[in-house]
Length: 335
View 1 (cartoon, helix red, strand yellow):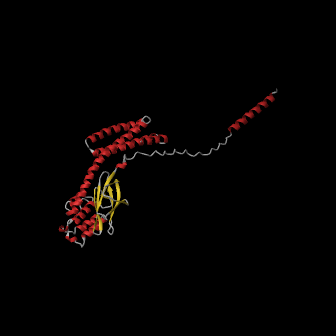
View 2: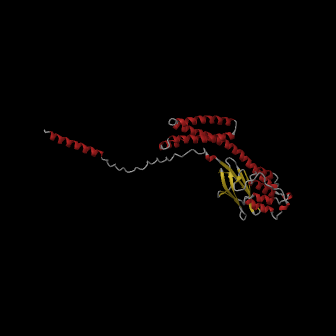
View 3: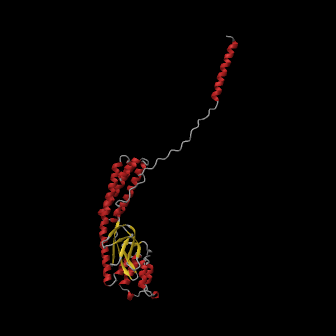
């Protein structure tokens, strides 16, 4: 083969190689990829936020004794209430109304405390119905500042001070009632006037002063009022015993709930349950000591501390697997 032919073949091969290199070096268009939405966070589990509430909450009630003459009609939270037997109501605020046809009704907000019996005595009092309240606070009344002036002041003389006081008491305005009662001279402080003084003191949140005033009330009305207070004292003693029993029952229920959680979930969550075990052991020893000492206040405080420890345990257990709904359901079932 002549040198010219070889030269032509070599040139053609070089041209092919150069063309291939040029093709390879050409920029290729990038593939277009549709943007992907960010991943959605896992939906919260239905049980995720559930924490244990107050143990045996339904036991936190108070007996309410309503007393009045035959004409008085009571209602509590809008429902008529009849009968002299005390009824139990949940602790907290309740609307109380006492009425007699033709007279201004008495209405107030009664703040009941768990395990603290309350007494409300109502009667027709001139132009209105007036109330004596013991064992509960008047939530709709102005709070007293430690003293209610009731001393006679002749400069405050008026035509019908007892009727004026009754009208004010029906509205829960003990301050206006006290001002009217200061127009009553000492020689005219009969059973009605002394009861009104006691009513003003009781609405102002001064039950001890109200009791002392009723001790001076003469006649059958005074005796009847003092008998009612004796009934209240007896009920208070009974509910103190009931509170002690409920506190013990509440503690036992609390420890049982902890034991269920530890048994059901302890192997899968040893950290939170181990910490809680040590905490409940300490609280149990303290509760036993308070029980032996008949220290009701310490027992109640330990129950509250135990409830908070239980809530902390449940919160920590839920936090170990926040989006594991099967786990969250197990925590709920074990409470």
